[in-house]
Length: 271
Image 1 (cartoon, rainbow, N blue to C red):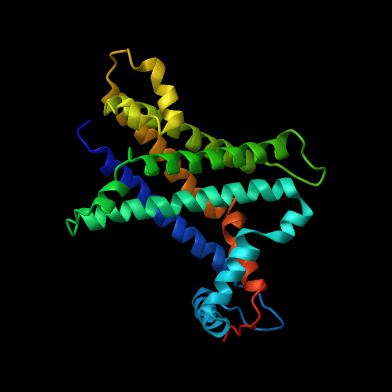
Image 2 (image 1 turned 60 degrees about the vertical axis):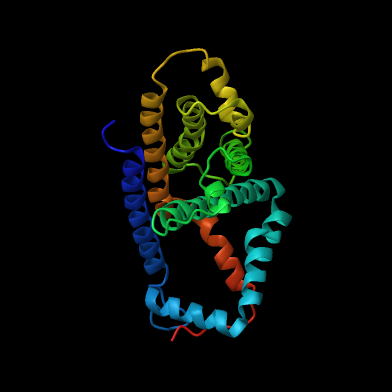
């Protein structure tokens, strides 16, 4: 365990983020290569400029309203298929919540504390995994995604509609996402054991805490076990993140942006 687990995590994460952004750029480039009404392809750069003009013309307030009402809440999908809408909302909500929360805590740890040496109680609470609110939010958002995944799997493999096709890439993605989410719980349980977190704090990470209870009387090398399980979990999470632009799940992330654009009044010229 010579290399810090956080060093390895950031190596995985930064590589995954590079692949994610490259994949998003590639997908956007492909989408924008086609001609519309005889016009020349827009290209990503021109589309970004047009998007900025779109926001300025429509107004940020209206764009945000369309993003929330028609993108995140997705009333059209809810009217068509309530169960699919529930799975979509749980997956997108859990993913967005974890992404935002991780970004905030990462910024607090690496920038505010690491770079500027901020010692405010709120910042210290954000980076404390065992602070009640932080632990509870992480646990609840993870469970929301697990529920959405169970609903997706049931729709594809148990009560599959006749028009729904599930190929090998779909199965690989579901298995990868399942492994990523579920591996987080033994990782958390081992962290609680390795750091000897007292029960009055550990209980807020309620799933990890329940998993750790039968193991508390054992004298195993918890720190070493946590180190390797954490790296395995980080590798799975990074692999999922890197694969996102190349999977069908990408539409779940992009659809709120498309819905917001389609339901906001001004028309945008890609010129």
